[in-house]
View 1 (cartoon, helix red, strand yellow):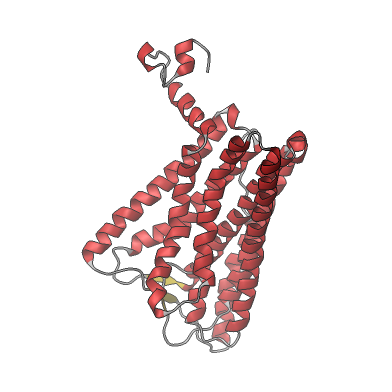
View 2: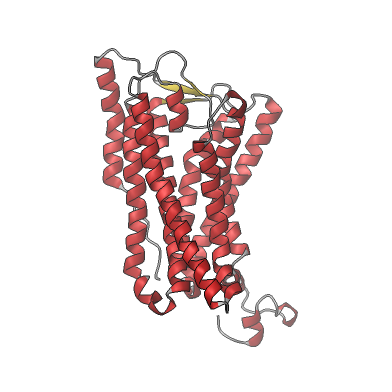
Length: 354
């Protein structure tokens, strides 16, 4: 497929950016509590710990951006990677860059700050984009599972069922579902009232941790709506992914032949799905207590920061086509390759054009 196109939900974002200001004005008219900023607890304030965390987070962010940019570039430049699976993978890499950029730069800045504060508008904005990119990634992972199901269970109809038009529709659905769900949750969060402590015991703004410090009467309603929307997007995507792999497993066991090749195309995706949904499920479904607060922060790092870094590594290490595309791209910069390097650039050694 030719090129990658990424479209952000601008109308929804425009309405969203206006809502916090309108919300603050309405709260002030009604003389209700509306803090201008929150305090994030973060990790340890010891200097040596802060230096170590800053170095680790900087390395993670660098690997995340460079790794996912490499994936996007290879997909755009190599004609062998113009299939629906790699079209989705290119969008996944773009989402991973955006997803980690919502939280990690702020965490890096806070690693050397004694007062880890974030404004009310900044907190709501962070919640919106974090949920938008996270929800979109959930739906996109389900679309990738459906692509593998069609490729393995319906190979004769693959071209028709996974045409360029249908792939564009699936990507658009992932963006729209993520942006719509996050917009509703961000608007509900913007209408929360706060009194007393405004310390969020987390690394960044997330709705469950914001609800813990809210004294609104409608906190339970907000929690119910937020969890219902999150369950619709996350659980719905997860169940569709599981259903796709159940059919894949049945088809592979029945056919027998080609079992290893069929599963090799699914291993990378299954690994990414397990990391993404597993860490998120533990964070949102396991009851929180004072003894698990530090563990919640570590899990948040796993699904918000570490997983976007690992995705390009997982796909490149376990995908022969991707490894061949990397070698092909590298060899383009060496028009004359010595004979002893023929294993690295087999096409050059054989005299075949790239």
